[in-house]
Length: 394
Image 1 (cartoon, helix red, strand yellow):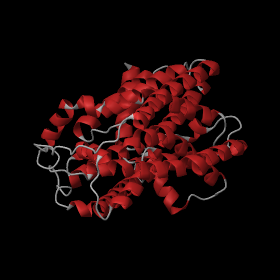
Image 2 (cartoon, helix red, strand yellow):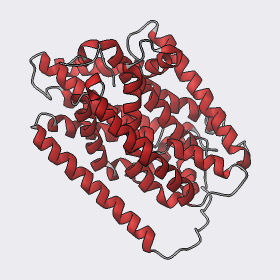
Image 3 (spheres, helix red, strand yellow):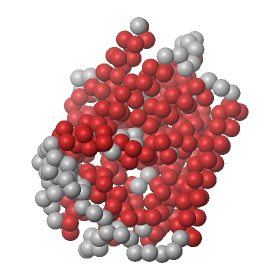
Image 4 (spheres, one colour):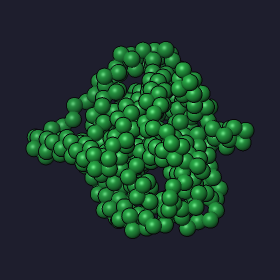
């Protein structure tokens, strides 16, 4: 999740500062973008259970279309971008290890184990929609794949992508052939640990419903492997270098010119039934366009600018900011904190959600800025690095 000038320099690469800026800014965009999706879970009075029910049968009010558009703009794009950036990070680490003359993957399985532990704690204590556990398993698999030949990696990429798309195609076929029916009204969550329970009640609720809450990382494992490999390949293909201009153009045309309009129309007009298709089939293509857009922007921009510096700071402390943003939002919304989600009327949910998002973004960007004035890595990154050093030494 982090990079250094030494890690990012490869033969024929772009000037180091421009590459570092693009990588860190992309991580920052991915972290704040995933919050744009998850914030709707956090501001629902019934948490993730209520969010899933609203996907199927959202009540109609004056903010319905605004909510649909706002959710669709973030849905899946930044999850895909974060996944691809993990693959880029793996490629950077592999390049660094090989330049040092050490074998790969070497001690990387310990890094994956620590990431899994971070994800497990984040899942139980903070957010049931944690992605770190799934990334840890994916990273471990891809780390060993990167030690194989490019041909083997290509076969895995194609195979996992075809498996994923086959599952999506089966889902689309079921939607097209089933008989239309009015969605059943969801039963209220009773008791509701999100609004009325303690911090420990939510921990127990997540543990008891781990099968439901951990289903997504399992189901999208083939896609995650494919996107990790895509990120590694794009890095080695020079997507951040001047020579990668043609590659970036293709990604922009496919992602912003074709996939983005289809994703928005299908997501807004198609309803919650189509979320698996937009989130896991179309949105990843948009993610690649966002990567290309930021890479192109910083190749031609000598200065980072205020917004770029703040995003880069979030990117440098990505793991800490990911956990912190969920913790701050949960404290604002859940019953063990201020309990604001249950206090706002349903017809005020959209402006309330936007307000919470802006507050959380302000908190974590200020945190990242202040923290990096004294330290060179985030607190969770520091603990992770310290644990890795101890394990490798042992």
